[in-house]
Length: 338
Picture (spheres, rainbow, N blue to C red):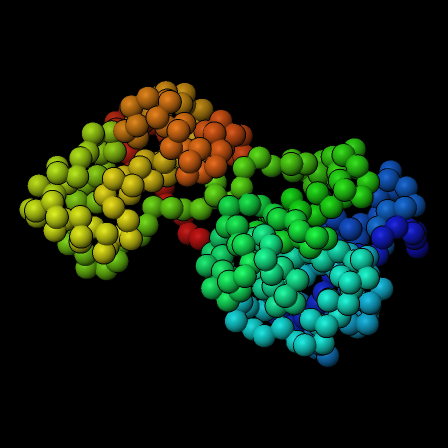
């Protein structure tokens, strides 16, 4: 068996383990990489509770050691957590705090941020988690500066990352810090992924707010979505709904959580994202199709909402057969599940 003598990375195991998140850590730190020499990472798993332990997908987990291995680790990774409402064992919190005090680094993927937050070590500093959990993290730990846009955040040797794929971004960044850019690039190539992704998780958030059921403005919103190119005004929307402007604005906000003007901008950005992800159409043409009129206006709102340029967003997706955008009246963004 080939051995290495580099930093000891310990991934935590628990009943209900997030299999993919653990697999990320094991793949990046646990795979032997002879091209990077004997100083590469040592990797082990530590069960934080008695077994038997199961992982998502029906796997029974065999661990390398118990929680005492945390006391020896140079880097401890929390690969997700059982659920954002599950309490964190006091023994684990104490071990993580002691590890950090002696100089170890702590990292989390996705909901694992709730474990690190429970230690108190993230107080008064930035952290991130999956955008779907950001509001819960902010409410439960108000002293943490929750960033729901970043792929990962770093503070005082504590690293938090967003969704599962953002965990890969963070782990590659740790490789870069420890072994340099060449090593990080080498690992990224073997994973067939970029060594660094531009933008944050804002590019993946579906921001068009869904309607609440039985809303009186639903027909108007559906009509707008069918013809985003039209230069809609709030007065025109209100007339179409048969309401006064004041009543329409109130009911629209009740239904969507935002005003008609901002909702329309977000709906157009979402439509642009859909076309960009599936086509090679020019930005100028897309701006016209979705109702922004000019590429400048599209880029302005796209950067504000998605935190990327349209070109940066497009590069993250495969090139596929362009959709037929000639019939603008029939264009609707494709919807996918979360």
